[in-house]
Length: 191
Image 1 (cartoon, rainbow, N blue to C red):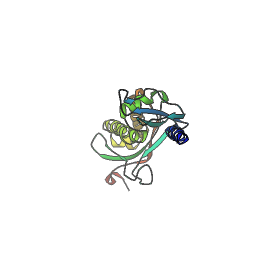
Image 2 (image 1 turned 90 degrees about the horizontal axis):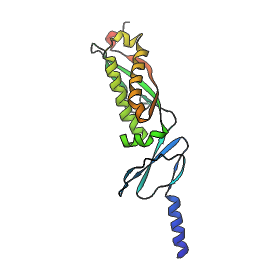
Image 3 (image 1 turned 180 degrees about the vertical axis):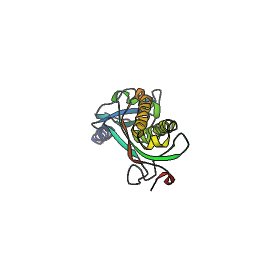
Image 4 (image 1 turned 120 degrees about the vertical axis):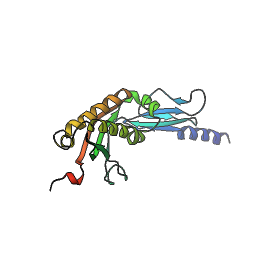
Protein backbone atom coordinates (compact mmCIF):
# COMPACT_ATOMS: atom_id res chain seq x y z
CA UNK A 1 0.00 0.00 0.00
CA UNK A 2 2.85 2.36 0.91
CA UNK A 3 4.61 1.63 -2.39
CA UNK A 4 1.41 2.24 -4.29
CA UNK A 5 1.05 5.66 -2.63
CA UNK A 6 4.66 6.56 -3.50
CA UNK A 7 4.07 5.37 -7.09
CA UNK A 8 0.89 7.48 -7.40
CA UNK A 9 2.61 10.60 -6.05
CA UNK A 10 5.48 10.06 -8.47
CA UNK A 11 3.08 9.50 -11.36
CA UNK A 12 1.12 12.65 -10.53
CA UNK A 13 4.26 14.78 -10.33
CA UNK A 14 5.45 13.52 -13.74
CA UNK A 15 2.06 14.00 -15.42
CA UNK A 16 1.80 17.53 -13.99
CA UNK A 17 4.89 18.60 -15.90
CA UNK A 18 4.40 20.57 -19.08
CA UNK A 19 6.90 21.32 -21.78
CA UNK A 20 7.78 24.67 -23.34
CA UNK A 21 9.20 23.60 -26.72
CA UNK A 22 12.14 25.25 -28.48
CA UNK A 23 11.19 28.51 -30.19
CA UNK A 24 8.46 29.25 -27.63
CA UNK A 25 8.05 31.12 -24.38
CA UNK A 26 5.59 29.97 -21.74
CA UNK A 27 3.45 31.99 -19.36
CA UNK A 28 1.84 30.53 -16.26
CA UNK A 29 -1.64 31.68 -15.39
CA UNK A 30 -2.78 31.13 -11.81
CA UNK A 31 -6.47 30.30 -11.47
CA UNK A 32 -7.08 30.60 -7.70
CA UNK A 33 -5.84 32.29 -4.55
CA UNK A 34 -4.14 35.58 -3.79
CA UNK A 35 -1.68 35.14 -6.66
CA UNK A 36 -4.26 34.48 -9.40
CA UNK A 37 -3.47 36.01 -12.74
CA UNK A 38 -0.45 36.04 -15.01
CA UNK A 39 3.03 35.24 -13.77
CA UNK A 40 5.39 38.01 -14.86
CA UNK A 41 8.19 35.52 -15.50
CA UNK A 42 8.56 34.23 -19.05
CA UNK A 43 9.41 30.53 -19.10
CA UNK A 44 12.14 29.53 -21.55
CA UNK A 45 12.15 26.13 -23.29
CA UNK A 46 12.16 23.22 -20.85
CA UNK A 47 9.88 21.22 -18.53
CA UNK A 48 7.87 22.93 -15.81
CA UNK A 49 5.58 21.77 -13.05
CA UNK A 50 2.05 22.99 -13.74
CA UNK A 51 -0.20 22.44 -10.76
CA UNK A 52 -3.96 22.07 -10.55
CA UNK A 53 -4.21 25.82 -9.91
CA UNK A 54 -2.20 26.76 -13.02
CA UNK A 55 -2.46 26.86 -16.81
CA UNK A 56 0.45 27.15 -19.20
CA UNK A 57 0.13 29.28 -22.35
CA UNK A 58 2.69 29.00 -25.13
CA UNK A 59 3.80 31.82 -27.41
CA UNK A 60 6.00 31.08 -30.43
CA UNK A 61 8.88 33.54 -30.75
CA UNK A 62 9.88 32.49 -34.26
CA UNK A 63 8.49 34.30 -37.29
CA UNK A 64 4.79 33.75 -37.89
CA UNK A 65 3.14 34.12 -41.28
CA UNK A 66 -0.57 34.53 -41.85
CA UNK A 67 -2.62 35.41 -44.91
CA UNK A 68 -6.05 37.01 -44.91
CA UNK A 69 -7.56 36.02 -48.25
CA UNK A 70 -10.81 35.24 -49.98
CA UNK A 71 -9.32 31.88 -51.02
CA UNK A 72 -10.79 29.13 -48.81
CA UNK A 73 -7.67 26.96 -49.31
CA UNK A 74 -5.42 29.50 -47.54
CA UNK A 75 -5.63 30.90 -44.03
CA UNK A 76 -9.26 30.21 -43.18
CA UNK A 77 -12.27 28.62 -44.83
CA UNK A 78 -13.95 32.03 -44.51
CA UNK A 79 -13.36 35.05 -46.72
CA UNK A 80 -10.87 37.11 -44.70
CA UNK A 81 -9.96 39.57 -47.46
CA UNK A 82 -10.10 43.29 -46.75
CA UNK A 83 -12.73 45.68 -48.08
CA UNK A 84 -11.70 49.33 -48.21
CA UNK A 85 -12.47 52.49 -50.19
CA UNK A 86 -10.58 55.17 -52.04
CA UNK A 87 -11.14 58.87 -51.28
CA UNK A 88 -14.19 58.95 -53.58
CA UNK A 89 -15.85 56.00 -51.85
CA UNK A 90 -15.03 53.43 -54.54
CA UNK A 91 -15.20 49.93 -53.01
CA UNK A 92 -11.93 47.93 -53.29
CA UNK A 93 -10.91 44.51 -52.03
CA UNK A 94 -7.53 42.86 -51.43
CA UNK A 95 -5.83 39.85 -49.91
CA UNK A 96 -3.03 40.73 -47.47
CA UNK A 97 -0.38 38.71 -45.67
CA UNK A 98 1.66 39.45 -42.56
CA UNK A 99 4.89 38.13 -41.09
CA UNK A 100 5.72 38.97 -37.49
CA UNK A 101 7.29 37.61 -34.34
CA UNK A 102 6.88 38.05 -30.60
CA UNK A 103 9.60 39.63 -28.46
CA UNK A 104 10.35 36.85 -25.93
CA UNK A 105 10.95 39.38 -23.14
CA UNK A 106 7.44 40.87 -23.52
CA UNK A 107 5.28 37.75 -23.65
CA UNK A 108 3.74 38.38 -20.23
CA UNK A 109 2.85 41.95 -21.32
CA UNK A 110 1.16 40.62 -24.47
CA UNK A 111 -0.80 38.05 -22.49
CA UNK A 112 -1.84 40.61 -19.87
CA UNK A 113 -3.07 42.94 -22.64
CA UNK A 114 -4.96 40.41 -24.79
CA UNK A 115 -5.66 37.42 -22.50
CA UNK A 116 -5.50 35.21 -25.61
CA UNK A 117 -3.14 32.91 -27.45
CA UNK A 118 -1.22 33.82 -30.59
CA UNK A 119 -3.88 32.53 -33.02
CA UNK A 120 -6.62 34.65 -31.47
CA UNK A 121 -4.32 37.69 -31.39
CA UNK A 122 -3.61 37.24 -35.11
CA UNK A 123 -7.21 36.50 -36.11
CA UNK A 124 -8.79 39.31 -34.14
CA UNK A 125 -6.50 42.07 -32.93
CA UNK A 126 -3.83 42.18 -35.64
CA UNK A 127 -6.43 41.78 -38.38
CA UNK A 128 -8.48 44.67 -36.98
CA UNK A 129 -5.39 46.87 -36.75
CA UNK A 130 -4.44 46.13 -40.36
CA UNK A 131 -8.01 46.76 -41.56
CA UNK A 132 -8.28 50.06 -39.68
CA UNK A 133 -4.90 51.31 -40.91
CA UNK A 134 -5.72 50.28 -44.50
CA UNK A 135 -9.13 51.99 -44.43
CA UNK A 136 -7.59 55.15 -42.98
CA UNK A 137 -4.71 55.33 -45.47
CA UNK A 138 -6.70 54.40 -48.59
CA UNK A 139 -9.46 56.90 -47.84
CA UNK A 140 -7.00 59.71 -48.62
CA UNK A 141 -5.96 58.40 -52.05
CA UNK A 142 -7.66 57.92 -55.41
CA UNK A 143 -8.11 54.53 -57.08
CA UNK A 144 -5.53 55.23 -59.81
CA UNK A 145 -2.87 55.73 -57.13
CA UNK A 146 -3.95 52.71 -55.05
CA UNK A 147 -4.24 50.35 -58.03
CA UNK A 148 -1.18 51.71 -59.80
CA UNK A 149 1.99 53.48 -58.78
CA UNK A 150 1.03 53.94 -55.12
CA UNK A 151 0.20 50.32 -54.36
CA UNK A 152 3.51 49.65 -52.58
CA UNK A 153 3.60 53.03 -50.84
CA UNK A 154 0.08 52.50 -49.49
CA UNK A 155 0.95 49.18 -47.88
CA UNK A 156 4.25 50.59 -46.56
CA UNK A 157 2.24 53.34 -44.83
CA UNK A 158 -0.14 50.77 -43.35
CA UNK A 159 2.80 48.64 -42.17
CA UNK A 160 4.50 51.60 -40.45
CA UNK A 161 1.27 52.49 -38.63
CA UNK A 162 0.84 48.89 -37.43
CA UNK A 163 4.48 48.68 -36.34
CA UNK A 164 4.14 51.83 -34.25
CA UNK A 165 0.98 50.50 -32.61
CA UNK A 166 2.22 47.02 -31.66
CA UNK A 167 5.99 47.46 -31.11
CA UNK A 168 5.61 48.70 -27.50
CA UNK A 169 3.59 45.55 -26.73
CA UNK A 170 6.29 43.22 -28.06
CA UNK A 171 4.82 42.30 -31.45
CA UNK A 172 7.39 42.92 -34.17
CA UNK A 173 5.78 43.25 -37.60
CA UNK A 174 8.39 42.26 -40.16
CA UNK A 175 6.38 42.61 -43.35
CA UNK A 176 2.89 43.34 -44.62
CA UNK A 177 2.36 42.29 -48.23
CA UNK A 178 -0.25 42.17 -50.97
CA UNK A 179 -1.33 38.75 -52.19
CA UNK A 180 -2.19 39.09 -55.84
CA UNK A 181 -3.95 42.12 -57.20
CA UNK A 182 -6.25 44.69 -55.68
CA UNK A 183 -9.77 43.96 -56.85
CA UNK A 184 -11.68 46.89 -58.32
CA UNK A 185 -15.28 47.02 -59.54
CA UNK A 186 -15.73 45.39 -62.96
CA UNK A 187 -17.09 48.67 -64.36
CA UNK A 188 -13.59 50.20 -64.02
CA UNK A 189 -11.77 47.46 -65.90
CA UNK A 190 -11.31 48.48 -69.54
CA UNK A 191 -11.46 45.63 -72.02
